[in-house]
Amino acid sequence: MSIVAYETNNDLPEGVREQVAEILNERLAAAIDLATQAKQAHWNVKGSQFIALHRLFDEIHAAAGEYADLLAERVVQLGGIAEGTLQSAAQRSDLTAYPRGIADGPDHVGALGRALAEFGAGMRRSIDETDNLGDRCSADICTEVSRGTDKWLWFVEAHVQVSPIAVQ
Image (cartoon, rainbow, N blue to C red; front, side, top):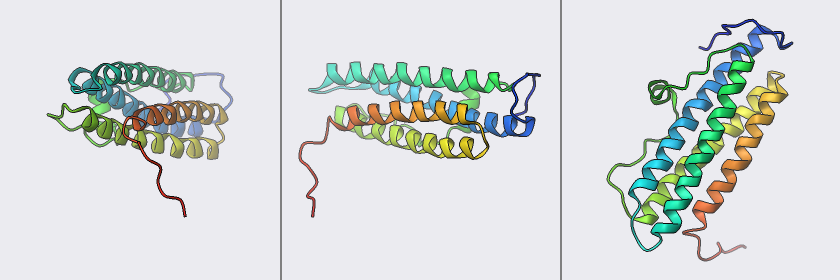
């Protein structure tokens, strides 16, 4: 559990700040994991869409790094300690492990798409959790990250979506 380690004049009650810091540290771990998964895809993608996917995965890596920074800085603003080491991320991330040994573009699209979807779902849970605790600022940060994640998921999935689903 995260603790509030530093005094602050932030008017949120200490117990709320502790709970929000814990939620955001969990999302921070997932953001770090997402960034490394995107870089894994970036380094290892092969196939006919190589250059487009190589660039896209690098952009996702950069965006995930920005999300991690937003989350970590909010934890610190609340008086907490951002737990952003690779070891912490490995222990805390709730994302499915990225498959080793894949190279084909569509395989990376599928794997990174799943990671983005899982990350986005976690961010949406965190919107509700932080809002229910009365921290609308943290909920707003989670909303911003969720919105960006949905955009990247759309970009990734567009590489494999070729025909619409039949609507009845």
